[in-house]
Length: 501
Image (cartoon, rainbow, N blue to C red; front, side, top):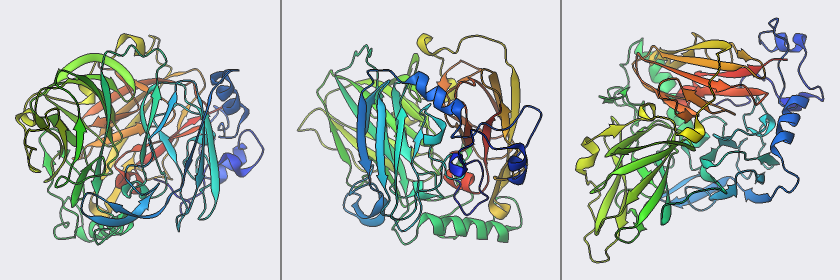
């Protein structure tokens, strides 16, 4: 997750020009192909795209975020971290599709920060990526994000500065559909997280250890044992290499499994559960004991309803499911896939029922398991058929040796941008050449999986496999594209989708 210690790239605030000059691009190490100069984040094209999203009677929703040093109670254990308040996750932000969001960020941290609105197809200069779309928000400084939220769905917000996401800096953004058909009685928002900050180390120290141990290992996946929070042998039958970090805690709605949050309902109720994986290095296998789940949405967009016992949620992914509640008290388990440990919430519909134990392992965890790549698009979300105009291969590479993760053989910021033009249909081919899974995230767009058509912005690419996706180039600017394992992104697995004039 880029910060300003790296080479400065395409920041719209560098000047009043709508796009950087060809000479300026060359100076920053960017391609200046015959397609034309890059469309900067402060360009007229970006302003025009935003204008088309705005209505004359548009409602304005305002909020304020104050990232700061906080002491957080995780449910009987207090940790010092960076957060948007006195609890984790941060404040729930909610608006309707088509609303204008105006969110002021007052940075009380001792470091630069930013806010990225994960999954929102917003204006490029509000995407919150220092070095690409904005200057960082300095310590003691403020910045106001203002953008139209065009599409309903479950989203979240977090920094795009270093490994700050692996602290307490994240919250949920729900964009409601004014035409929502309903069909459920209640709604729960469930945020999954892996937690290490304030337990004797920080995410920045973890990254330094990963890089140092990788340099010492001399290659392969070894050399990580006993490194205090890191391990090389974590494996998942479904995902292969399951992450780089052993976390002391896995959280559900900010609480450890020993003191879980309770989600209350009544027998027979239909509940919509919005799952968000805000973790940095962990995919979660989620199941509700005694129940099946019907998946209705993936990354905000409807899918053909799919009934499952358990669901794999990669970092940055969101899924909406419907459950019909039974009578009793049940474990909602988020098992850290391929790792030892799990998060827990209690779903209670009967006051007298005994609470499940912290280590509960419902049979559903080992029943039918679905991933986002198994889903089929819902008819309203189907990307219109048309020919592909341009194709880009993204080869995912790297290893623990030196702790370097690459796209097409290079580390950001030396990766070549993926050049597109307004109006094109673009195909991305994610080709994983590593033994670890990578949740790949594209900013500013949703894409359609060529297999099944499900609309997403983050997709798991399993080891030695390929995932193809298509998107419509209809949101001009410079858009980060990266692995949502935050440590992989910071170690180089990132590039941009670069609109050219």
